[in-house]
Length: 154
Image (tube, rainbow, N blue to C red; front, side, top):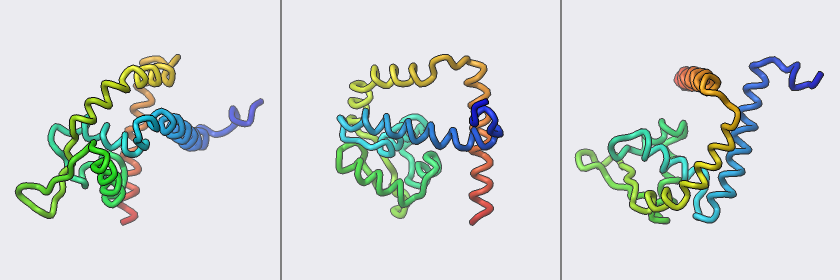
């Protein structure tokens, strides 16, 4: 009997998420290198493009990425230097900075779309729609639990 098979589900899932995240990060870094982007920079553009129907604040993006305000600000500054985003002060409140995607993001998306589709297809190969739905449900619950844990620790 394999040691992994005898591992309790919670331990396997906890460790498995870490390993999957690390391997995905490594592979994405390799693919994004040709575009001079890091995984965190790419993720910020994905979050802004897919979660919001407006130019979000740094705070909103930080929440969407599960990251700190300061971390998101640093990533956004790098993206601004590369021409992927513009950071603008809110027209009603100068204390608030909004992140706006530039046309360079759309261009990058077009150039990398086929590679992205192939990567995603290979990653989810052999996983049924039912398994995907169950995984999504479990991850949503874990994310909600993490949010509660984060609030409790403040």
